[in-house]
Image 1: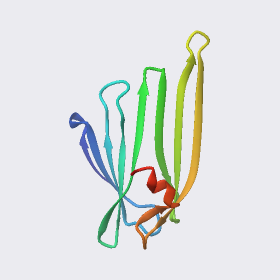
Image 2: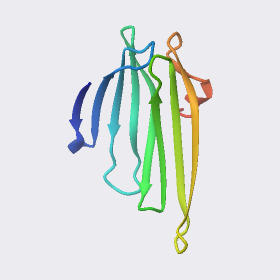
Image 3: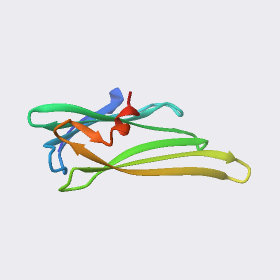
Length: 127
C-alpha cells in the first residue's frame, strides 16, 4: 500500500491493492477534524480499467461523549460486495449515563459497468 501521511495538513492519502474483484486499487482520502463536534471522515475512489471513480464520502464525528456518528466500509475479498456500516449515538441522561446507540449495516454491490455502488438509493445520500 502506498501511504502519504499529511496529518499535519489534516488528511492522509492511502492507495491499496483492491480486495474487490473488479477494482484494481482503492484510493482513500482521510480527513481529520481538530475539534470536538467537527466532521471528519473519508472519501473513497476506485481505480478500474484506467479510470478513477469517486464512490462515496463517509463521515465521522464525536462530541465529548455527548454524541457520535460514524460510517465505514468493509470490503469483501474476491467479490464485488462492500459492507456499509453506520453507527450513531447520543447521551440521553448524563446523570444515569444513559447513552443510546443505533447501528445500521447494508450490503452494497460495485457495478463496474455503471461505476457505482448499488442499490442506487445509497448514491442518493451523497447528493
